Each structure stands twice: as C-alpha cells, then as structure tokens.
Length: 196
Image (cartoon, rainbow, N blue to C red; front, side, top):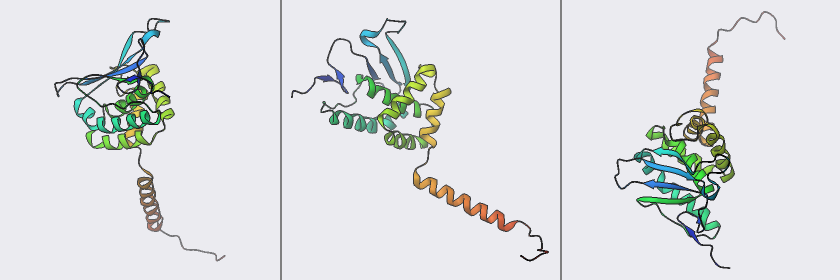
C-alpha cells in the first residue's frame, strides 16, 4: 500500500481541496490567522471562497502551538500520513483537523494567560467528533474573525478554560460538603420537647 500524498498537516495533494491555513507571520508581534478555504465547493450556493475563522494573539498561539502540533501529528500517524510542523508563513491543515484546531484557538483567544493550560488539557481530552460538533455549533453563527467571545465561542472558552479535572471536582465537592456540615453545626438547636 502506498502512502497517500499530503501537504502540511494532512491536506490531500489534489486540486483545491477544502482545508484550513494557519498563517504565522515572521514578525513575532503580529497575530496568527486561521482561515478556512472551501476549495472546489466555494462559490456554490452562496459559499464564499474562504472565511477567516480566528485572529489569535501571538502569545496565545505560542501557548498552544506545540501541543496542537503534537495532537495533530498523532492523528496523522494513526492514518499513516506524513507529519508536519509549524513554520513562518502559510501552514496547511486538513479540514477536520482545522476544525479541531479552531476549537482550541477559540477557547484561548480571549482567555486569561493562566487559564490557557486548562484549555489545552481539556481540548486534548475531547474526542475528535466532540471537537467537530463544537466547531459546527460555533461556526453556524459566530465563526468569523470578529465573533470572538460571543455565543458558542464564549461557551467554548468557558468550557475549555474553566472546566476542572476529576481531582479538582472531588476537591470542590469535599470543600462544599465540609462547609455544609459546618453550617448545619452552627445553627441554633431548639430543645427537644418530646422524646421519640
């Protein structure tokens, strides 16, 4: 079986496929731009040629780039496809992997710096089909570059950055249970008038 020829992160080496690009400027102060290109399907039924999905601040990109590369490359290896790496300029990403990457980018685009590791961890924990579903929900109404932190994009940010791990949930529940018990113990007790 011959290896399927691809470009970048799994983009089929064929005429004008549906794919994403990640434009990484050489200047480290400029934003990274993620764009969806509709390929041969563009221009039909009102579909545009492309849509800029996210302009990600460079610091946010730097915080997610390595883990995103690792996850995308793992997925490519599973399909026995060539892996890739990020470089300055245009980086092509297969359409489904691009949707997954958008979900992560949307999760961190307006997030506080200290919450980005949570977003990455929670994004990695999602199954691919869960990432695709989140992309579809957000892209339907708020999938453009100017739609950050609105509707589903805001929901994605909150879900990825504020969603605690199982250990954190257990700790929160224990703390709440202790507080509830203490509150019960602090209530005044009425004398019992009748015995059981």
